[in-house]
Image 1: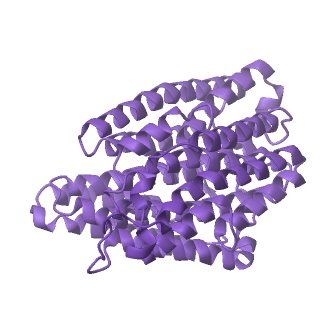
Image 2 (image 1 turned 30 degrees about the vertical axis):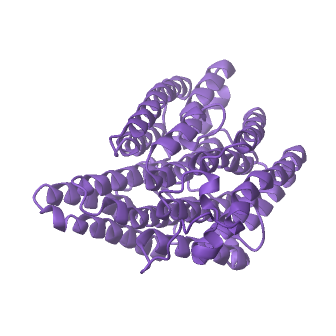
Length: 469
């Protein structure tokens, strides 16, 4: 057993910061609770620094239950950066809140659970990460303790409990079929196990992962939770769980069933259904948070394309990782604008934004057009890589459908952008006297989205590399 604890520094730092924040928050005066927010930011920064320092190293630790490889390193960087941005856009809303410390502790815990899912090389580790990422998130969804937040938390919890139970049943089924829970052992044993038993276990485990990702048919909660939760938590719900779930799904399918002929088609069908349903559902949305939530479902459909060809194309891993990074910063940039303009709840509330807050309008334009896949944003290059991987893996029909969906999605994003340039009846967006935290996050995220698109050719080579076994 390789008990290399330094290999788990990012996860350990988040958990240690969560425990320290919980203890410190119990005696710090309310005016000093900001220290826990600073502690969270420091923990994320340490995790980013140690991960960047370990790039290129590949190993498995604790009897193969956790893998540290390219996918883990990149996933850590995306999650920690996204968590840092979510903390930043939460500062203004949570300042002097009586539960400020608990809020950041919950974010740290769910971030640690997401990291556990990313590197999991064992079904039990995967399920433990699923629980740690999920249970604090249920509390965050209803953190505001209002009617909408309570309903969002209840729906989130009920769906999570149901599909988490199904996932655990799938873990037990695959253990019965393969006599182990470690991915490498399952790959060696499942080819001789009863086909029906393996298929049942696979579908059940995928049910839990698809719930976390927000993909069809486990997508029903996404729009309600995003609409009912506060804007920073809606930003979290539509980004961080997707990163952990999609990388975990990629690793699980790639390492457990590398030669399967059936599951790639299953994932391809789910990808087609997710991107199509998400785009159609977003068509006539007027609530900005619900529109971004349905957009998330469609984006997950595009990302699932890379997973469908995980064992068929060498382009799948860099395409998935790059698209996840570009999607995360672009989506967080859009939600940072929504967070700053908390009174603008529907599309028409954004009338006159380009005149009164041109900086925020520019960020929103970059992020929304970026989510469509407009150059030179990172999502454009991510989509290009994913479409290329799908064609290379023999799913040209899926790439054609994705291109059609991309064109269709332009409609509802433009429905939001058009009011920005219309005259407002009153000065609905008074000029800010100083740059607030959400505004700063919006500028950083928008700049990162553009930077990834421009420097994508330099970044993509670093995303190559085999998964650790």
